Length: 305
Image (cartoon, rainbow, N blue to C red; front, side, top):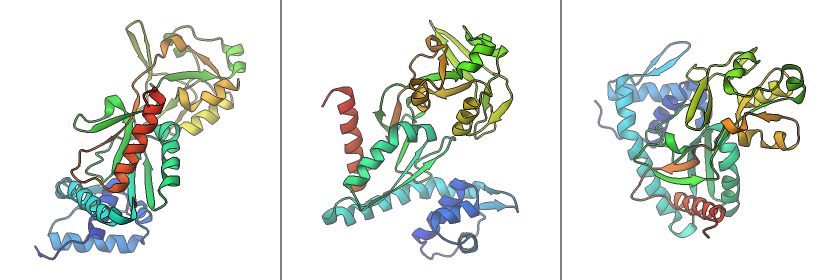
């Protein structure tokens, strides 16, 4: 293998392709052409004398060698970027890029207000927010922070709660309930038209209910299976059936009387959302500032500050 030093752009290229599973999407993220990105990966593979990705005309899959490369390089690259940002920020204040991975619903309900406030205070910082349904290794994928439900956060991460505990909501139009009646128990949903949601891994998301220690998970049926909450909401608004949402995603529609909520006693509060991050020796000034803001706003909400 050649002992030439690897450049940051080459490492970024590998991480981007692995994260996106597509040269085209990774090239868009990196602001380069697909051809340039493909050439960068090919040249790196030649120097390493190992194939990092298996490619076909329709798919890209990381190899075992590529996985090992990412596991070793990802954390080191994060530490290097943090050190560079710390030096740049020593006199000029927080700067550089913060990368955050979150569920789309978490980004909308809890994260974006914090991001907007932070960017107003720190104009030299750029935030790269990636929203996706799958769980990722934020260290291996070179994210500074992740946002997930508390129960999904790895045990070795530092955690800051965000907002209030979440809860689910089953909603529909008043006209739907006038025609079909309101379910009184979760099992009665099996007789209703429900709009199902497909997860990124292809599985159908089950509807979760709990009351007095009784836990129910239903595989509902209905006329539509969708993979985007905003489209599910549109289908409910058209009277196609009942939807199952995080309550904060339909809060305004419920308050405005557009949606009617049912089975509230079966949807108790669940885990809070959390901002989480690894315990790094030298976090960047931008990361420190973002952590301070999140902690301060959560203290305000909890009535501590």
